[in-house]
Length: 176
Image 1 (spheres, rainbow, N blue to C red):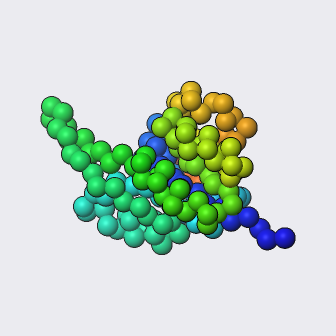
Image 2 (image 1 turned 180 degrees about the vertical axis):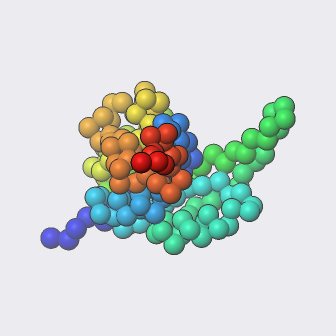
Image 3 (image 1 turned 120 degrees about the vertical axis):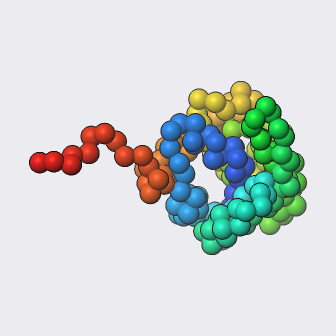
């Protein structure tokens, strides 16, 4: 019997901010390997706002095995701060439907309730494998009815944490 084709559709901002809000940073290359090894993901679509100057990041993500789908970003000034916004929700839903006939199972990586209708549809067609939620404490109530599919990124923290940028603790000994 053929192995099912599994595709992942990733809301990059929700993933990145959800993990960072818990005090750690995701190593995207390790995360892609985890998706391949644990869930047999053959294609991982990463939806991301395009920001000029981040080309080396985009090259790194591509070389790590992600298929990047860009959304133009908008800058908004709030006081002295500049907020860059690139909402990718529509692109993620659209691409999951464009690719619908090409995969047997889908993994949605986001805790955003805007994906409720997509997740509900995939579930009704027996095409939903998992919903990987970046932050267990702050994901949409709308997704809670899909708990049997939900797993949390922090469950994989030891395998996917970016230890190169991990802050050093004060318990490091410098003297005998």
